Length: 236
Image (cartoon, rainbow, N blue to C red; front, top):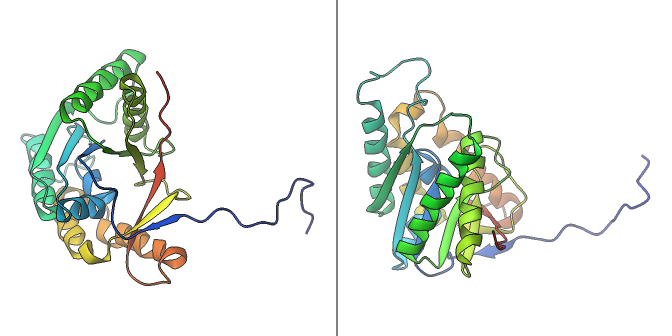
């Protein structure tokens, strides 16, 4: 095997290992109803358990989430909202707002500015110390658009807290892994609340599988972990 001239034999940096999430008021930005559980669900439950205020902002209505028409179109958006509320209740979160943007759309610059302004409003109202958002490398377009808008908003207000990106469709090399073993059954129960989406994907299998896999390097092969990347905030 030939190695490149700039090959570095030293191992990559290891992720920080957290037994608890960073303390403080939490604002979690979510692209679709269900991502609040799929991505940072365990972290949100642990924040609640340690007494942190948690608010969740869900950007889209999720109406593109039934392409095969398994459920009645009338009332489908309300159904998705109800599933998200029920899932968050399983995690102990009551404070949730729905922006109602359509999902699976081509995002124009004016749309992105609207998302940024909405995120600025949420940030200024909640004054969070910890912010969760989809990491910018997500494959799904709605996830990337929300990440871009929130990152712009964080820069615009000069956010000085901790911003953490979570994974859903596209795994990353984490900067930190959080042990969610103590609340994994709450995350499992929350996932089961998203009945419409379980019609298409067994999220309990794939997401808890990912959380279990995270323990391979960072938990001695035991338990469940969520991974996060740090989001660097600059002026926008």
